[in-house]
Image (tube, rainbow, N blue to C red; front, side, top):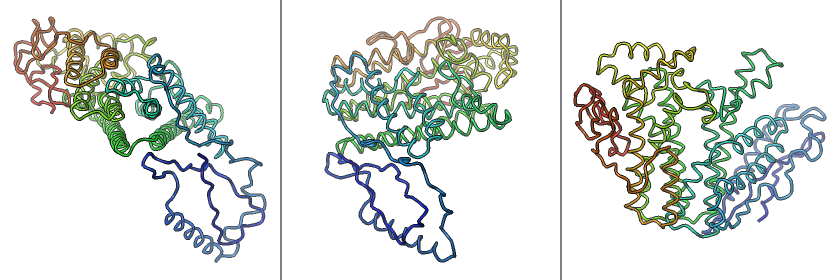
Length: 515
C-alpha cells in the first residue's frame, strides 16, 4: 500500500526564493475492520488547511512578514525526500515454528527493518540529528540486551495457543516495541543514576559527552550528553508507540493491547519516580522498596509482557489472570535477583560496576531488609556501616566489602536468595490454573525460571509456609508463613508482592503489609 501524498494548501504564492521541503509522510494503514489510520479526517484536513490559509494571510499584514531572504531555508536537492517505499508498513507472515528456534533473532530482524526506516526518516529531517541521535538510539537498541521481554511476549502467545502466521508478525512487532521502550528506560535511567557504563560500554550520555569533550568545557559537554540522552529516550518511546499503533490487529485485540501498552508505560514511569524519590528521602521501608520493585520491574519486565502475549492470542480471562499472577511473582524475583547482582555480581557478566545501587542510595529490598534485621537485633556496627555507605558516591571497594559482610551477617542475602526461588516456584504454580498448549507452556516455564535466575522447576515444592534453610527468613530455619519467627524469635508481619499473596520476608517491627 502506497502512502497517501500530502495535499498542498496555498493561501498565497510562496516567496520566489524559497523551495518547499518534502517531509516524511505518515502512510494510511487499513485495519482489519476496514478503518484507516495515519491520515487526517476530512474535517481535520480542511480545518488544518483553513488554519494555514488564515495564518498565511495574517502574516502578510505586516510588510515583509514571512518573507525569507533569498536562499534562506533552501536544502540541497533531494534533501528531506525519503527513499522509494520508506515508511510503508508491509506486514509479512512469519512461520511460528521457525521463530520458535530463535526468537531473539526474529525480533532482531523486525527491529532492523523498523530502525532502518526510522533512521532514514530522521535523515530526511536533518542529517546531523540522524547521525548523532537517531543513529545512537538505533545502535543501542540493536546491540546488547537479551530480548527478554519480547521473548516473554512470544512464548506467552505460543503457550496460549497462538500459531497463526500473520498474527506471528504482529507478536514480533509488539516485542520489538518493548525493546524500544526498554531503550527509553535504560538511557534515561543512566542519566538519573549517573551511570557511565551500560551493557559493557559507555552509556549513551557518556558517549555523547566524550564526543564533544574537545569542543566544549567538560561540564557543558557533560550536560549536553545528559540532554541528548533524555531526547534519545523520548525518541525511542515515540518509535515504540509508532510501532504499536502501526501493527495490524483485530478490533478487540487492538483495544486490549493498547490498554496494556498504556498501563506498562504508566507503571514504568511511576516505578522510576518512586525509585528516585526513595533515594532523595533515604527511604528504609521494605514495603516501599517492594512496591517500587513491583512497579518498576515486576510488571514492566514480566507481568505486562505476558499479558500482551495472552491478549494477542485471545486468551480467556482465567488464563490471562493466571499469567498475570505468575508474571507478578517471577517479576518480583527478577528485581530481587537484580538487587543481588548489583552488589555480588560479576561486572563482566552484568555489564555494570558493582555497588551502583549502594553508592546511589537506592531503596532496594536487599538493603531495606538488612536495615530492618540490624535494627531488630540491635546490631549497631551493621547500622553504622549501612548509614555511612548508602548514598556514598565515593564508596571504595573495601567499604563495599563491608556492606557485603553486613548483608551476609544479617541474613538479608540468604533470605533474598530463598525468596527468589520460592517466588519463582509460586509463579510457575499459577500456570497450573491456565489452559495452556503443552509445548509453549514448557518453554514459557523454562524462560520464567531463567528470567529470575532461580532454581525452581515446574511442580517443585515451595508452598507458602514451607520451611526454608537456616537463615532464609531468620535464624534457625524460620518459616515464611505469616506470623513466623524472625530474628531473635520476635514475630513479624509478612511483606508481600503487589498481588497480596506472595510472602517475601518476615521483618520484625515493620508494621505494614503491602497489598
